[in-house]
Image 1 (cartoon, one colour):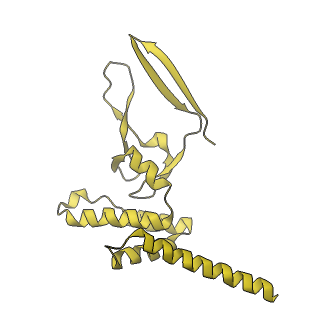
Image 2: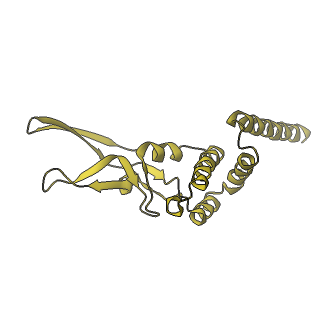
Image 3: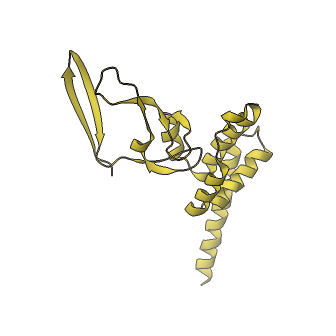
Length: 165
């Protein structure tokens, strides 16, 4: 559980709010799946006054792959299941392929493959990836319906096995 402290103070006529994380939440970079505290993703920006330390409120940078992303993207992709992450990554990959500039390609496949194997969800991810690659125009509803049918079948098989013994 993350403890969060909010401090408010008045400085030169302005009210400032600072959030201090005693235990910062862990997030995953969507482009290389590097896991770390959110505080390591902050980007230092040039302060308005000398002696202050400022951070960007919206932009974040991965310490592993150096890719810049929005804070909401970082938080959103951390909460995704492997299947939904595959859908998000497929759309990002398709966008990168449409863009002819090689320097804009941000997905680090070697790191993603290794991290998926470490997490033990590589099969679910690649199964969903193949689905999206074969059916790029289909909706997520079809994929979820297919997964629910498979899970129901597995549950029924477990019930029949339990009743047989």
